[in-house]
Image 1 (tube, one colour):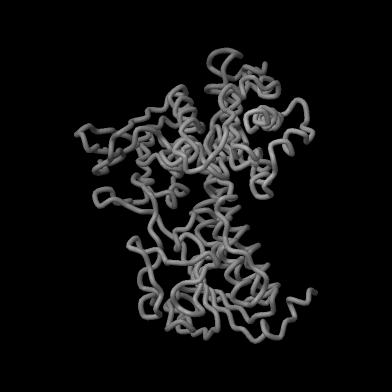
Image 2 (cartoon, one colour):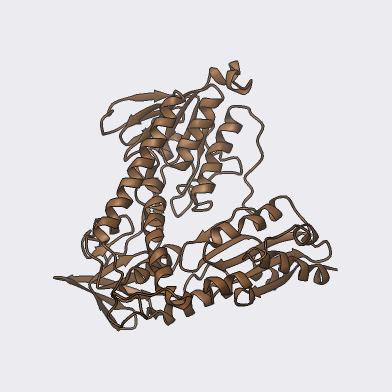
Length: 479
């Protein structure tokens, strides 16, 4: 056992955590490691919405969709589908998805992951209380309902990790059957004949991509000029081209005003008066923090106009001894960031070595087909002069491994600091871009020079070879 875990100072500390998502359970594990007496209050199940209704379920669904997309392109590689309606040349009709079984697997995996987290916490001596909770001043939590209603947890340190929930529209209220949020899609047993997705941000784009691959007709309604308005423009352009080529109907610059159900169909009315009729509608227009009614104001915890908890780089709130992590803070809506916020909070609160949160080296991925992964400074920031950098973009269509795999869409893009050649960011658009972004993230985090990347061996043939080639081209540009 480490000396940190037996620290007498830490052993005297009582830590209460409200919310058992990544920010909460990772904080609890760190606090327990440092010898604190830790209690977690969780309403729905350990892992929170990340595990039960958001990241784990959606990426499990996307894994099935990814396989379907691979099958769809298999004929180019010489795979035959004699069971199809058009002889042995097309997969259409020979491969289909049982959405009920897919969703059963999704829920099963999410539940298993939640139980694994509970087992880990209990093994580390963390006490778990079931129910909703609220602050009773800055040094206590009370359980307001659920199995452990009435319990009170006094604490020296409190961490808030209450997450967020889907934002809804006043005239598009979900019914859980035809009008859905992303938490409700897993109760649909049959593949939607025509799914209308309202919202073209990360969540909307991911579900539109997944259901399109699964065989549903999809209409994606975007209020902006393009899909994924917050992502790299070149990457978003590639994805929108892929969407349209695959038959998806992308309706741009059109805000949804209302969604109304008529029996077994829904009608989405747009701001310009047009309507889109479908069998189902998924409303994906952002999220709101779960911060109402949990005693923040009374405890002296400040929030922003959007309702997010204000925190600094070590996760402290305005109330002494109260920290916050995850989506309720609005810092960066990623499970990895929530987890790091929770860890940093406990390292700081319990007196361990800690460095402030650094968002510049956070890698993120949009799990569409193809995936879009990014890290570091963006091209928009370089173009605007906010960052001084050089850019190289290489299409995957020239990569030997991509040709072998039948990959036609995508690219790698690498950014380095002008003069020094330090890698400051990058973008990968490709199948499994979430895996390919790691060497770029490592380069950004460790401030590697483009020559460090260029001189490292890359496998031939490999998609990652394009990253090394981009670094070699940047060597000349950075001088």
